[in-house]
Image (tube, rainbow, N blue to C red; front, side, top):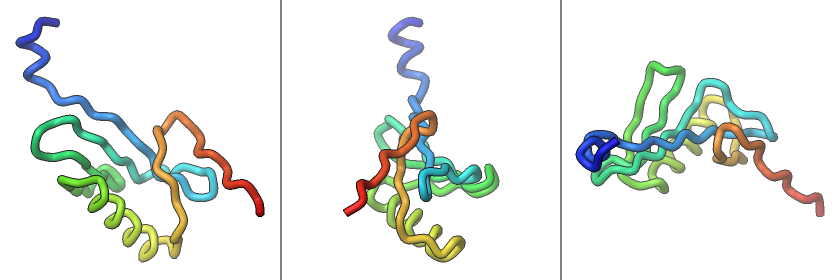
Length: 89
């Protein structure tokens, strides 16, 4: 790959949303390394939402999970890695 080729693509880093240590199978987050759009949230591969800031995407996911699943606690991690368990008090 030449330097010219590198200018013609955008790098995506997929993330999953975990609830109680299990990933939601139909929700993916793509971190985009590009100048304008930074985060894409894909739901069921039919709905795509773009955000300029990670905090806006996280707020959207928080509201989506609350409305659809009644869940308030979640973690966002790379899809191939299980989230860390919260220690019991």
